Image (cartoon, rainbow, N blue to C red; front, side, top):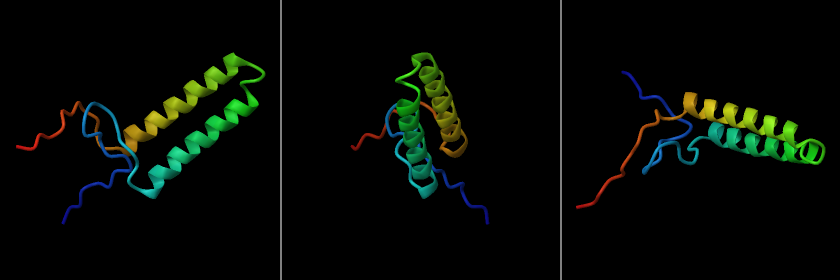
Length: 83
């Protein structure tokens, strides 16, 4: 018996991308992302905007990579219409 994979991030109903997490692992990733973002703001933003921007790009790439690996495959979705 084959089970379907359990995604941390489901696909959005409308548009492209992922919605809110549905597992505790997904929520841990989101909380970790915002925690690291707050750390960047406090430590790097007052001193060097360039270092902050580089850190923000790195965090965002890491976050999107995790969503890509652990989320439902992204594709454009038009949603469902009720008759």
